[in-house]
Amino acid sequence: MKVKSFSLIITLVLWQSLAAAQDLLIEQATVINPYTLTLNKQDVLLRDDRIINVADHISPLEAVRRINGSGKFLIPGLTDSHVHLSMVPGIGIIDLTSSAKQSDLQLAFTKQAPRSYLYFGVTQVLDLVASPESLELTLKQPLHPDVFHCGAVPTVNGYPLVFSELFSLDFFPYFVAETSAQVPAGYDPALHSPEAAITRIKKDGGRCVKVFVENGFGDQSHWPMPSSALLQRIQAAAEREGLPIYAHANAVDMQKIAIDLGVDVLAHGMWNWNQYTNNPGLPEDIRYLLDQVVEQGVAFQPTTRVVGGVRDLFDRTVLDDLLMKKVVPGELLSWYRTEDAQWFREEVRHDGLDNLPDNIIRNLFERRPISQGRRVIKYLTDKGHPLLLASDTPGNPSYANQPGLNSFLELRGMQQAGVALGAILQAATINNARVMGVEDDYGSVSSGKIANLLLLDKNPLETVEAYNSISQIILKGEVIERETLRAR
Image (tube, rainbow, N blue to C red; front, side, top):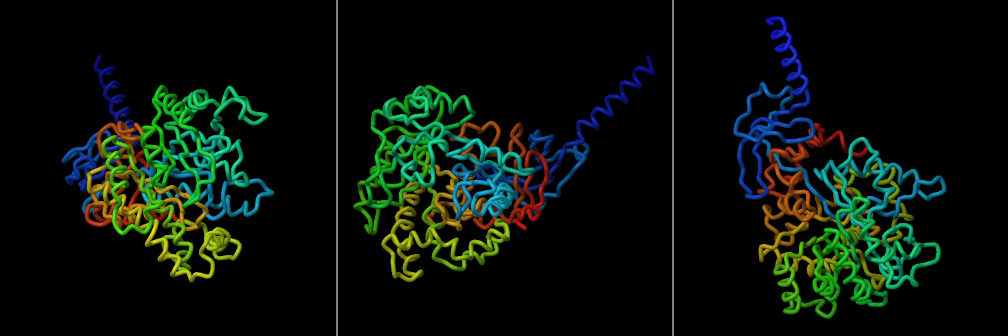
C-alpha cells in the first residue's frame, strides 16, 4: 500500500509538472481594463492558449515561465474589424500564378502581411469580403492573427461588380440577384437568392453579411443600386441566421438608406456630404442622421484611412517613413518608388485634379472629405457612441494602406478627430469583440479568455503612440518579441 501511495504521489507530481510546462506568468504588469478604463498592478497566469487567472499576486510556483511586467502596460490584443486579406496595396487582388504581373512581389507580401498585423498588435482581424483562397494564404503562414470573415452579397450589376476589370462573379460566391432571370448563365439561380446566399454564408463559417449601398463615388450616381425589396430580403435572411449586417456606405444619402434598413454596422465613416460639402459646421440633416445612429445603436467604423491613404499618395515622403520599412518587404517597397507603381495616384490626379501641385491636392483632401469625416466622428464620440477600430486595409489601391501600420494610423486618425484615448482603447478591443459576438474569448484581460495580449512600454490612456511601443505580443499564450516580426 505504501509503495502504491508513493507511486501515486510521483505520478501526480510528474503530471502537475507536465501540466504546468506551458504555463506563463506575467508578473506585476499594469493591467488596463477596457470595460472600466481602470489600471491595476496584477499577475496574469496563462495556460496553453487561455488566461486562467488574474490576481494581485499569484504564486510563482504555479508557472514555469515568467515575464517581468513591472513598468509595462498589459492590454488585450487589438481587433481590426475591416480588412481585405485578398488585396495587395498598390497592386490589387492577389494572384500568385506564374503569369501574374509582380507575382514575386505578391508572394513576399502574403508572407509578411500577417506578421505586419501582429507587429502593430493586431491579433484578430475581420475580413469583410473574404475569399477562401485569401483566408488559406493567411492561415498557412506560421504566425498570423486570428481570422474571422464575413460573406459579401453584392448584386450582379452593382458596386463593386461594376469594376468588371477587377472583380469577377467568382470573387463574390454569395452574390445575389433581384430575380432568378438576372443570374448569369453558368451559375445556379437557386444559390443566389438572398435567402440561399446567406444560408451558405452561415454554413461556411461567416460571422456577418456585408451589403453594398453605393450608387457612385463622390457626386456621381450612375451605378445600379439594389432595390428596397432586395435589401429587405437580405435583412430578413440575415436576422433569421443570426448574422449582423455590415453596410458599405460613406455618403449622407447612402447611410440614410442603410440606417432605414436597420443594419447593425456602418462599415465606413461619412466623408461624402453631397450637397452639404464645404459646409463649415455639421448640417442639421446630418446631425439628425447621426442621432438615429445613436438611438438605434448602429455600430460605427470611422475608416479614416480610406481617404487618408489616397491623400498620402501625394506625399512623396510616405515611402521614407521608418514605420513603412518595418512592415513592407524591401523588394515591394522598392517597386512602390517606380513610375509603374504610381498608376492609382495618376488616376486620382486625372479625376479633376490635373495640373494641381501635390500640396494643393493634399490640402483639398484635408479640407473636404477628411475634415467632414472627422466632424462626424467627433459628434458621435461626444454623444458617447462607441466606435470600432476598422482600417479598411486596403480600402483602395493606395500603397499607403499597409497591414498593421494602417491599423495604427487609424487609431491616430481617431484621436485627430477628437476621440478620447479611453474610447480608442475600447474601439480596438471590447467594442469589436461585442459586435462580432466573441466577447467571451476576446476584448479584455480576463480569466477564461484567449491569451492574445500586448505588453506596452507606454500607457495607451496617456498617448496614442503607446500602440507603437509594443514590447511583446502574446499570441495564444506564446511570447513574440516585436522586432522579430519586422519585414526583411
